[in-house]
Image (cartoon, rainbow, N blue to C red; front, side, top):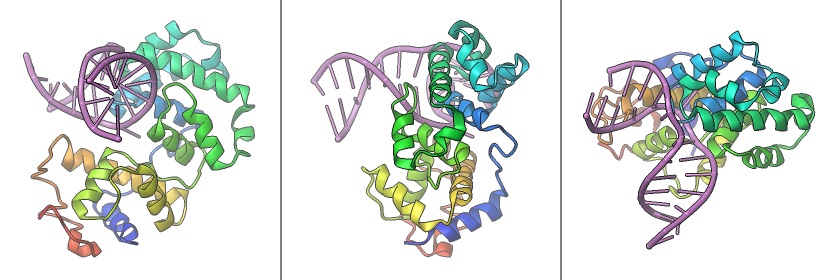
Length: 222
DNA sequence: CACCAGGGTGGTT
DNA sequence: AACCACCATGGT
């Protein structure tokens, strides 16, 4: 069951360190997590750049801005009207709870549910926030992870993200490792598996720098 | 031109 | 529970 560590090592050897949000503020991570939904990071980055230029990258500044202003600024991220309302509400929520310092005292399961209760924050976004902005020991289950593990023949219940999440969280030591693992899985997915069910160029099949046999699991895709 | 990207929500069957 | 339409920009 502990094939995740060797998998992460070979992914890192292949793609190098990812360093998502390495020099970003905690609130910027929250903003990024919401804005990047169903779009590219480059588009989300432009939106964040617009917010920064207008000095609207703090909890209070976003909470005080009107949705129309936010919508204009985050336009490149797509779904901008929807996201503007949700972003403002999310900032207002964090402010209402006394900011990050107070939220840091909340237990992970409770904190996760609190974020899930926000409009526009689903399982993946909540876990990105918990993992990257709060340093909680959380693994982000996304489409890339499910597909990769399925291809590798990792036995997991396809109907339960929670089970897979828990399994990976138990296999890796801390938040940093889980964050890096998720980033590496995304890097792999973007490079090789983008919108291709058969994934002809996928290194998990042939030209694999970290072949399934190498990490001790069965390769179903072969 | 079509298809998709680091999702989530609300409605229908 | 499994679908569906919708949200919308920017890249290929």
